[in-house]
Image 1 (cartoon, rainbow, N blue to C red):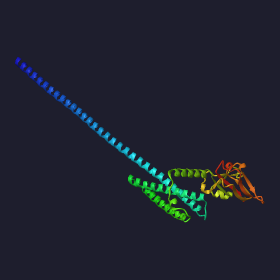
Image 2 (image 1 turned 90 degrees about the vertical axis):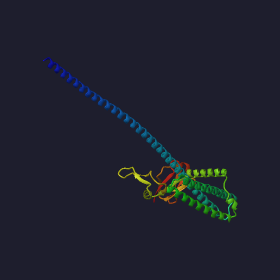
Image 3 (image 1 turned 135 degrees about the horizontal axis):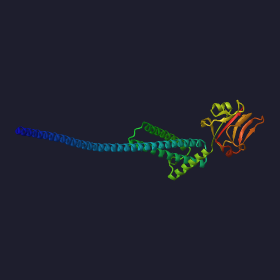
Image 4 (image 1 turned 180 degrees about the vertical axis):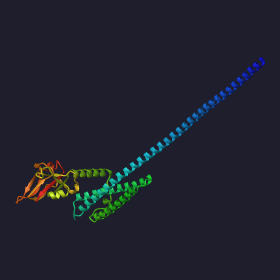
Amino acid sequence: MKNEETNNRNSNSGASLWQREQDARKEGVAKGAVTTAVIGLIVLVAAGIIAYSLYNREHKKQLSQMEDQRQTFTEELSARDSAINEWVLTFDQIEKDLKTIKQKENLITLQASDAEFSKDRKQQILEDVRYINTLLDQNKKKIASLSAQLKRSGIEIKGLQDKIVELEASMKERDNEISELKMALVDKDFEVAQLNSRMTDLQMTVAQQDEKISKQHDELNKAFLVYGTYKDLKAKGLVSKEGGFLGLGRKEALIEDFADSTFKQIDVLETRSIPVNSKDAKLITEHPTASYEMIRDEDNKIACIEIKDPDQFWKISKYAVVEINK
């Protein structure tokens, strides 16, 4: 009996030991799995961090390159726009010079049309021809420089290229006209050497200043005049009826938005009267009453409006609109 109990105890003790070993093995396997999982997770996170760091570095590098390219592109666009603006300004100046040359040419032609002219007039013609020679020479160089710059820039804009071609043609036309004018002057005892000379820098500066002063003087003395019946003025878009009640007592008023082309341009120093030749007339624009007078003829018609004080008459406005009632 005792042996059987002893055997049972030994059997239970062995089973318990085996169970503990199994439990310990399972626990070890579980811990190993957890440890492996933790290590794997750490490796995975580390790999992710490294990958993100590399990606972030490459992304920043690409962004930096893109920003550099954008900056370079912006600078190139700015440089191109600046060059184009400079060319356009030069184009405008050349065109202004060509107009000046044409004006001078017309003036010389008019002055030289007389059979005889004074020494002072002859000297003035020579000065104008020298001025033209200098302008032609300067603008030929400008056009050549523009053409060379456009080729070097690599900018291909058809409008700019066409403009240069147009200016070259205009310059050649002016050159031919001046050559013909010089030949006509030679026939009037002008010397070829004199006609082909150019102005010095000092003379050119003085001439340009005189030209500027002359233009400013013309601008200051410029005014605009129009006269006609109410129907005529309304058709030109200059006046309208306003005010009054039920159509009674309405007054003519000048429309603010009008074009200068509807007026006749005059010189305030030369125009001292406005022809009317009508039974009645009135000024739609505002002018001091003391600065002008309605002059009547023998039939009591208004022959004209005499401007007694030009400074006061044109002080308020450089525009004069006269309504005539026939």
